Amino acid sequence: MDMLPVNEAKLYSRVEEQADRYFRKYKRYMENLEKYSLVSKVKPITAFDRWALGKMLENTDALIRMCEANGTVGDLGLIPRIARDVVTIAYGISPISIIASVQPQDEEVGIVYYKAVKAVTGGGNVSAGDTLADVFGNWKTPSRYTGAEQQETVGTGDGSKTNFTGTLTTHPIRPGTVVVTAGSVVGRDYEQDGNILGVGISGTVDYTTGDFDITFSTAPANGTPVVATYWGNVEDMTLGVREINYELVSKVVRARIFALKGLTGLFKSFAMQKRFGVSAEEELATDLVNAVNSEILGEAITKLNAGKPGTVTWTVTTPSGVSYFEHKQSIKDAIAGAERKMIENAKRGSISFIVAGSGVCSVLRTLFGWETVYEGRGMATAHLYGNLDGIPVIRVTDTNVLNANHAIVGYKGPSAFEAPIVYAPYMPITVTSVLPTASPIVTQRAAATWAAVEVLVNNFTYGLAVSGTYPYS
Image (cartoon, rainbow, N blue to C red; front, top):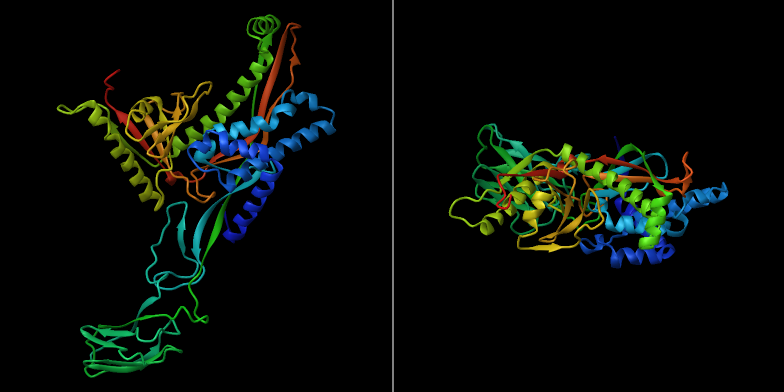
């Protein structure tokens, strides 16, 4: 991983420009994403969403053009007719954009990014180059860095020295703000004229240069620090304000191929068409796409679960003297406890999503503050289920991916580069046409995509486990 300096304003300006271009180019699909998608029901569609979707739509168009140029567009089957719709629907219905930073790639081996905040200029307890915050939980709370007030030790008493001279580090100085102390002796710039006055102390300070000359009537005792507290004049352009910058941590990822084929027979096709008016081949294509997307989502959840730093536990068993209705409300305390652990590790954030097994979801959906968004009809592995107090909840139906009694709380920040995991698609989902097999009465289809799924920041997650016995099972 490398640290790459970046001007975040310029970076986001570029993303917004491209998002605006994609919106104009793919307006119908962008409007469908914003108006009708499941994702839009739990979070606002941002410029980064439009950029990610537009990039995938553009890659889909490029794939179709490539196949047309090679005379093989027929191999794409249904995709030329519905390609953009499939990509838009998949983005709008899949929870992947809720838990992951979606960063489409132009190459099989690409670079994904997440950010850190570093100090450009020093001051207070911060030195130039210090990391103020990064996605790994490194954090320094600035002191006398963003504020105008400064404090520095300008000398140390030895029991005999009465005069102290030197230059204050930060200048020009705001008039009337200088205070000099040595133990209980205090001198101030009362008249805003640069003269330091007090009982047992006198002196001067130059507001422009920072030069000071302080004299004590009685020498400060040995080891007593002489401390100057003052304000820098930030309105003076020669001083200005301190500066931070964002740097992107880069990670190289390699896209993996996800591919699946399925068979259907002549007699099955005839029966489905005759009885239901449904094409067995098209049903098979839909099932293949769902299966491939389910594996990608399942891999993302499995990796998040494996990398979480720890787990808090809540018992579903109802204590004596308390109704189950009252007791189950306390699972929110456990969720808050998991959030606290996550914040302690990451040094920032709050819960922005919950990925939960079916057992945990059976409790969450009965709580005050719950709103069902989608019951998951036709979805495998996991799906966006609802909101708990405004937090999206993703229900995992496959216990091989996540235990029914386990959950993961996670943080995905307001920046597109603050997420626990990244989804980096390279080649969009593709379905072949109906292909022959060795049997003259059996045909097959295949679906494939090319994408990377990588955990970036484990500290943006924490686990929740439910123990005990459910009252209904």
